[in-house]
Image (cartoon, rainbow, N blue to C red; front, side, top):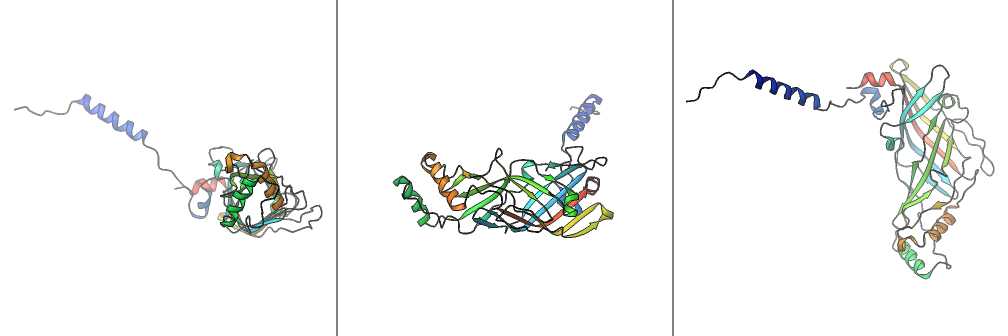
Length: 298
């Protein structure tokens, strides 16, 4: 009969080393902000210079380009961080930890959709048939989604004192439905729709008239480490918008994209110069010290 002796010390050492290696390889449990700071999970602390965290939600308002007004009925989230220089007072916005989450892509319904668009008689007959068939079957609803094409800028002094641009957003507007396809945009990275929003009073060119924003109601929490601004209103009615491009690219391999672009532009009143467009964003903004956010993580 074979006798079992004491484990060999060399085998014990190998086993211990293996267990240690596994422990080191196991991913650490992710920590997240808690309590009053729970909304700051996307604060970009991967940039070591970030010392402020921003979370804002637009819950109502409207976005008008040319002859079309799109009410904001679904919350749009803006989040990221700031590098605040205490010596110069300068503020540099930093995209969210996951850059695609900086501005949420939240589709808003365009009232009326394509109902007023009729295929022009000058179009090729096959395109008239296809277009009118889509319309007649009720495929008229259109969603408009505002998408970032650059990095925002935020000036908290301007926001709090209603002077100058508080928030600047370089965006494009994505128009989508079954007919327009997935590549129909107003604006682009090279030709952005740049909205310079203020809590003060605008000075637009005619025919627009001045409109007034609002700082809202300011609440300090945690000894001033967290600033919550409720019932905030940011406005701009001086921006311009280019023509829509890329509409209907899936129809007959995109050979009629140009004429569909023309129909969309005619319906929406594009291009639309400064003084013919309006943005009103109403909601809440939260601004926290980065150190306080990190201290809340669990």
